[in-house]
Amino acid sequence: MAKILATEIRVGHLLEWEKKLWKVLKCYHVHVGGRGGAYMQVEMKNIEQGTKVNQRFRTDEKVDKAYVESREMDYLYNDGENYIFMDNTTFEQISVPADSLEGQTGYLIPNTVVQINFHNERLIGMQLPQAVILEVIEADPSIKGSTVTTSFKPAVLETGIQVQVPPFIEKGEKIKVNTDTGEYMERA
Image 1: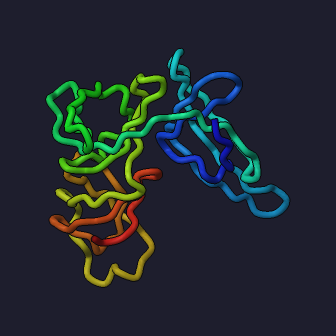
Image 2: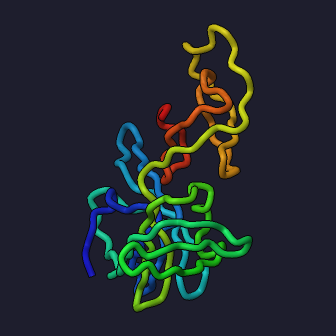
């Protein structure tokens, strides 16, 4: 088991905290001005019990990252109930139920390379790439001269998720989306 800094926690990581296994669902770096220090706000799900908890870790705090066997796999397709992945070394296909990929399915398009995590030969989740490129299939039309404003508008992407984008993004464009936060990063 390895110790990592709280700032190194990512969505999909498996942590050992309070003698239990926890899967990281969301994590945010929060910096409070003034006297408050920075911390990581982490939403975790207990692997055995299914309970969720929000926990704050100081940025200089070390946490135990559980030993996880990661296998690089390609996402192939969704058969309606399960997501099918192929191991890049053995070409073996595995079927993953949608409920074990909580909130991550909106970033999957065919041929996306992901890390599928196993703990004691049991599938425990998936780690997405830091960012993915997705096509905008629905967005309000841009308004002339609105490129300077800092306002955002909703856009629906090819996987069905909704992301706030700058006003100059239009239907048919490809954008880069951060898989940890679900935020627009840039045009692709």
